[in-house]
Image (cartoon, rainbow, N blue to C red; front, side, top):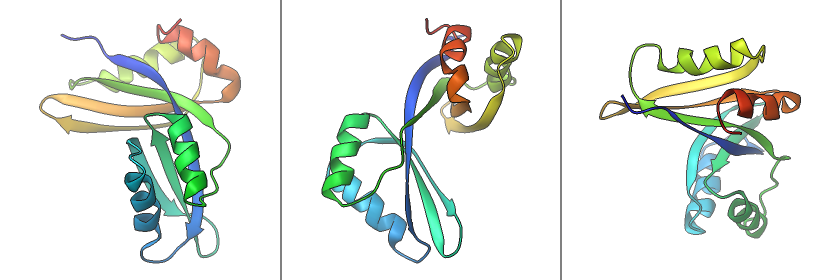
Length: 139
């Protein structure tokens, strides 16, 4: 079995009007600027607004492209990207490492990626980021 790959990731969001075409506008602008996103998620956020979460391959490039497209990015937050061979308990194994270190997970999303692989993201509080990195074997 191939061990899970875990790395730190950065997360930003933009707030847009909750109407057709807004997510396409954001993603079109970023795609046109050659920004590779590891993940994107959008959902209602307040009255007639939506939050579009962006997890970029390269944070600096995202910030520059967002500025050019007049998109107001949130402050950077950090989390972890986990990828590996799909198997029962794969995400639970990673969560268990954090539990052993007494670190609370604030959010987790994981998906089957096909071809026997899975991917996911997990987030801890900013104050726990360094300890979580160590618990996950990142130093």
